[in-house]
Length: 285
Image (cartoon, rainbow, N blue to C red; front, side, top):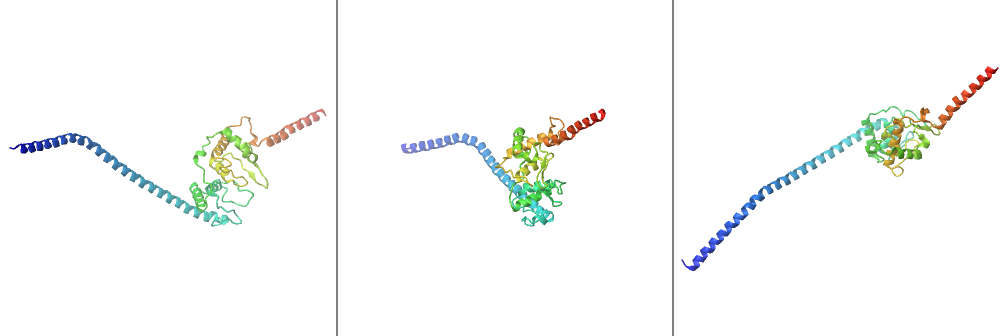
């Protein structure tokens, strides 16, 4: 064998050995990477599958909520046409018998209908509280319909209706903004022209909030710029505290304040003095 041929043979053997060595060194790495790659592929597949499923469910839920809301609006429209349109007009424009409802929002409807003030039984200086004529779902449907025509104040969130605010601060806010009509203890009071500020005992937290928000009857509107939602929550807390705790001063006399107390003293105190004087005079004679 010539020298050149021997060199070529040695060179070919060297390349074969090098290739085999490279395969031996790569093979363990490939074996180590293979399980991780499989796990990664499975995780990616699960991630995409779960994301697609969640997106599909969310879209289905949104569609269901929209359908339920639309159904409620349609039912509210029928209830409104049958019970409210005579006074307020089919298009909520109002008539001579009732004001427009454009812009009053769901909160006003929930308050007026939910407290029994509406539908009105007869024309009077003020709509009184009376037994509610509709179920809760009917009230919600009426509110949904009116707010769908023209937006306005919405029904308050439950987080402001838990009566767990600052009762002391709420009592101060109530004295400043409400006591001149409703009495410092929320017992109510007389106004002009046969109107009155109703007692707040037994009124639900939601309706107290809605009254502040919408200003029914002669009551002014306390929007969020006048009284923040936290302020309203504190006022509700103070009213519920007074309602649920007895008076530390004994007999409350209806919580009507110094007028009732003075009248009590005048009739019974002065009357007792006069009766005693008459008795002493008669005995002397």
